[in-house]
Image 1: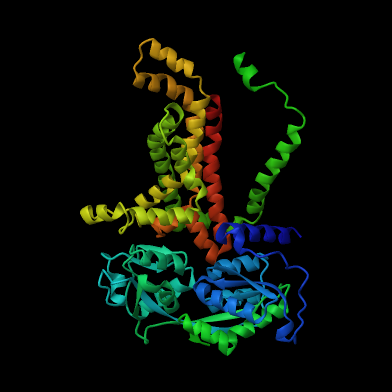
Image 2: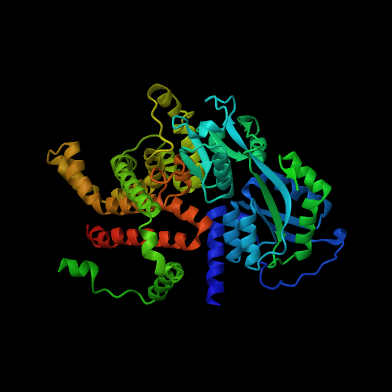
Length: 267
Length: 266
């Protein structure tokens, strides 16, 4: 009991502290561990909270809109943060219905804890070098990341984009000399877009989402890393039917088309 | 005698006691919960980890530096707000309080647009001298100061407004220069509020996260303060995050507890 209580406290603290109160949905967690399936798409209604990796911000914004358009009785709330922050929130008992992560290890930990159903890969994302528009520092490729004279950013090693970025650099034989290790990919991208960093390694989808302020430089396929994005419904969901329908939508042709338009590769 | 009449002996109105007790419980329980979750057995190893020692050093240096800067710049500003009358004073006061209202991440972005390499002021400075605030400890100090300064200014202004101006008038009448009045009369009278303001300012700076990471970035040994280290530890290892938080709590208590009596005594 005490543990549950502290978990709940930790969950609300995380919600308030990390993503802002508005991003946290209503509490609906306790009473719905049984799942019913086989509902037809047309009679869906209810509200779901989708915990999604920060790199999915734009794609899930559009996917959520398309999903609610198809099911007018449904509302989708998005809680967007680093996959590991979301994982912590879910493990601490945060009320959520769907979890979409930017790597498999965070998903696996949630599955192992019994908090998520069987995950499915719904998208893939490769990495790209992001430079400010016009590439003012003339970054040519991965070599720039070993240049101490340039202002270089990576994601922190603790988050997936930092993990993958280091993997890419190791494969290319470059020892990175970063000036900052950002806690998530969006904050890295913000600094590149503002021209405060000369280059950073981010997801291809992020370069696309950043628009005209950022240019992408492709990373050769032989050293590039492709990240699998898994999605799963959560066992604590109060709306398991709606949650399952949302996952199904992501895997449908319509869902995949939206993801592709935001720079993701199909599952 | 005076002392006793001022602080001891008086019994509070009974209605205040339960309210005060409830408030205290509300404040203390989260810390008890944190202690309960602490990884006591591995605490020693975790605390000597260079990630922790470097983050702690950076946190202390930047929090004290921000407090020092806030004192040097904030006390004159508080004096201007409390003692002089100029057009737009309430607007100035509102602007001073703004960093308290602004989400720190937004404050950090604003700092970046102002003092970054391509910033309003930072751009020309960087082009001329090559000096850059972001991604250095100077950036951490700047972010801490921006966020913590209002706490000092607001507290000191309130203290100055509460002080009896007749002492200043008397000193001036007796021939003291305006600088002497400020130094020998105003400052001593405002000392309790200055100390209280400095403590608030320091505490706010020590816990600063959003503005720091947005403006100065995050690099172990250069810009990674304790709150940033806690945040990243939370991503991979919750126990490490709790251990780091405990260090922050312990350091704060070590500074705040001895200070308390002196600051109340003024």
